[in-house]
Length: 401
Image 1 (tube, helix red, strand yellow):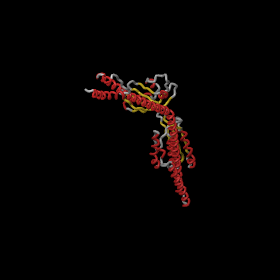
Image 2 (cartoon, one colour; image 1 turned 135 degrees about the horizontal axis):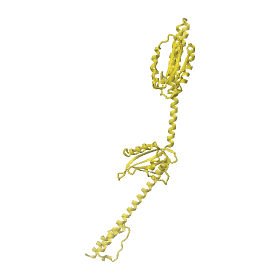
Image 3 (cartoon, one colour; image 1 turned 45 degrees about the horizontal axis):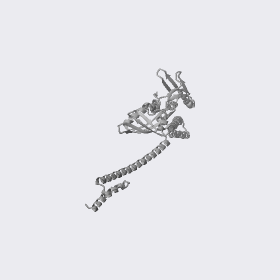
Image 4 (cartoon, helix red, strand yellow; image 1 turned 135 degrees about the vertical axis):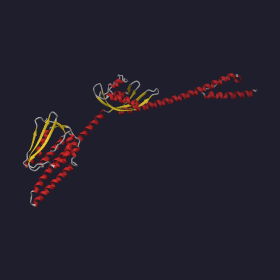
């Protein structure tokens, strides 16, 4: 081979090697000219290629490290924002390991449950000891069920060492780890103030509803007494009209009767419909029966005196001062029976008796009308069913004889 050809061949051999070496960040120098043997050049070229490859890998590794560091910074920023948001909302994070029966919580969770930084906080018994005695069994049961169901939502009370009671609400979801272990991860929030406000609102609502019911019962009682009074007036006017031969006098009686009927209709409109009190929720409270009956008798006693028929109340010696009953319904029964008794002609006397049988703890109220020509009131049978319904709501019965 001629020197020129050898030179060209060496140049073709060296340039790729130099290119790799230069690309790798270095320059290959050699001595001896073209007389260097072939194995030496092969070694030099091989080392140059290896060095370039290592430098490329190092650059890639640096870029990868930079990317990972950027991701770490991003995660750190997200974690910081999350912690700020959770702290602002007062939310704690907890984790329950069903396999180890251990529960762990972050700093806010520990603060809610009243744990200090020096206390062991992954012991499930330590957390369980904070549960309110009335809530503990239910909380543990629902948490165990959540491991199978996958979702957990609960609200309960906890008791701090100083005796303070807090209300908390927890929610979480099941998470299965790569090793097959099951955990529930969730959040915790103290809601003591919210529960107090809810209880206050419920109490206010209950008071408003109670006041509404009381007003409805009062109106129902007023409506009943107004109707009883109007019916008594109507019956008296009918008797008066029957004995009047003068047409003008009868016309005046008819006018008075029309006004009385209008009053009865107004009383019905006040309570929306006849018998509205029967639909009101029954109330079971201590009632002084003797006092209630005396009040009803006092209201209608002037009517009896005008008819020369005194209204007398007789109370047996063993009648207890108070019994459990619905005062409005009991008053309705007495008013209705007394109104029926006052509607009889030839009336001489009305007796309202209150009796009591200690052996059976039965209380009885009787209204008796005495006089000449008194017969069973057919209209009373029509109102008997209504009286029976009122008495049945208090566990009693009504008999009309």
